[in-house]
Amino acid sequence: MTLYAAFGAIEQGFVYGIMVIGVYLTFRILDFPDLTVDGSLPLGAAISAVAITSGVNPYLSLLLAVAGGFLAGVVTAVLNTKFKILHLLASILTMIALYSINIRIMAGPNVALLGSETVFDSVTRLGVPAHFAGLIIFGSFAVLVVCLIVWFLGTELGQAILATGDNPQMIRSLGVNTDAIIILGVGISNALVALSGALVAQNQGAADVGMGIGTIVAGLASVIIGETVFGCRTIGRAFIAALLGSIVYRLAIALALSFEIGGFRFNPSDLNLITAVLVIAALIAPNLKRRLIAH
Amino acid sequence: MIRLENIIKYFHKGSVNEVFALNNLSLQIEEGDFVTVIGSNGAGKSTLLNCIAGGFFPDSGSISIADHDVTRWPEYQRARFIARVFQDPLLGTCPSATLEQNMALAIRRGLKRGLARGVKAADRLRFRKELEHLGLGLEDRLLDKVGLLSGGQRQALTMLMATMIRPEVLLLDEQIAALDPKTANQILSLTHDIVRQQGLTTLMITHNMKHAIAFGNRLIMLHQGRIILDLSGAAKENLTVADLLAQFYKTQGEELALDSLLLG
Image 1 (cartoon, rainbow over the protein chains, first blue to last red):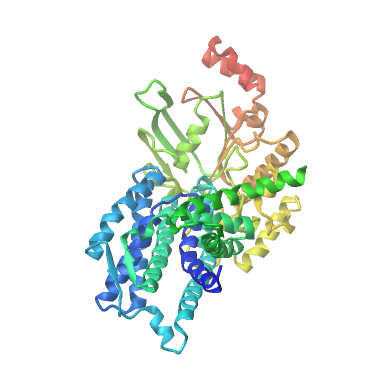
Image 2 (cartoon, one colour):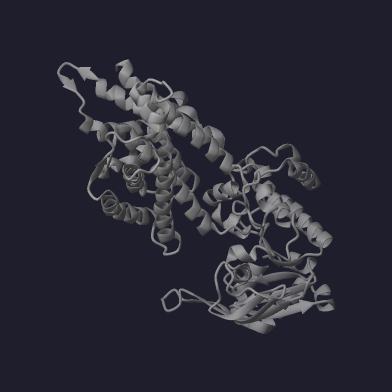
């Protein structure tokens, strides 16, 4: 793996790490497997790209993307809590609907941002070299998001979210409307995923309706790798682990893609297979370790 | 304080599994009453408590608590008035949260939860003091996860959490049934102390006739979703287990011979 590839992987790890934080919130904290993310990532990208091409400030476009993502999460959570549709199915329905909605928003399958002002320009204008701008922006957003979410989960409201995932009967009998909490939590999760998508779009100079495919798998892979490698004893540690897991995941992918024996090498299209193998490895690693120690 | 009027509740109505859980049940409980509830399995004891707590809505009839008609209030809204301790020690606490986090959740029962810190420094002192009263050494384990505690410790903590802010109504659903006899007695005397100190309006389900007689100022027996025995005052104080069994047979006849085994 070249230094350049490693650098790119860390950058990707940070920006998709924001998405991973969102996935951790639903998947682990709320115990709500949410596939909406495959649709809310390109939703964020689409909203941000369209807003920028219409002359909106790139930072403001991120806020719009966050709002859009939140709304998508709310739809999924309302389908689940109010209409009693299984969470997995509810999220698939929202995801499918978002495919059409994203194309509507972009008035086509993609939107280019060539020559438009993005959040990266605000950094390069300060004299930072262009190849560092991504790392700086992605890194600061990711760290900020981790700090905010850890702070939030320590508040009265955040503690109610944690309890809802842990013991809904108990927290209901303490006066918390668990339906409202789930709606809020899944909303926040998808807001973060949309933010991640918006930043990706601004970085690669385009939003594309297909860019969300496999988001949930990459998210889960990162979550599981993070937990396995870095642990999840406290909430703070768990979210830092999720972010680091995202970086390790992207590095592992980059490593696999640079792998070459004789005439054989991986294609980018082998990515899904590599991801599946990575997740399986991370899942069975603790088990394997226990067995090796026992014998 | 609590008024149930003509409550009817079916489960799985219209299916082969239909259960007639509460049969036109009416009950009025005064402020400060400590009511013990007995009855065989399936008599409707837990259903009655769940109905008061708002776990489901009755098919017909009305419920009022502290002069509020709460018949259509969801469970989380009734939490303003009601604290509960469940039979399963796992149900009353959050295993992955610490003791202080669990207690902090409990002292905001029925209140708005905002962006203030979940566990406040001032509360820690109070938690420590309350835990000292339990005498289980939990006061030094505020930062331990509750999942590490034994069933008895968790149940004691739940009892404490239920009463740290005074509930209008305390619902105890066989809170000692899953514990060993020694721990069960500790929890029971803790219950007795707290209820008496605070003068709480309490309903306690029990399978133990001795407990049902020894505790509280009123005893009700349920059968097939109805109250078939309701004793208070002197009538309850002079009660013996033999009386209770005799009463039970008198009302129900011989057909319930099997139930006496369950109740004894």
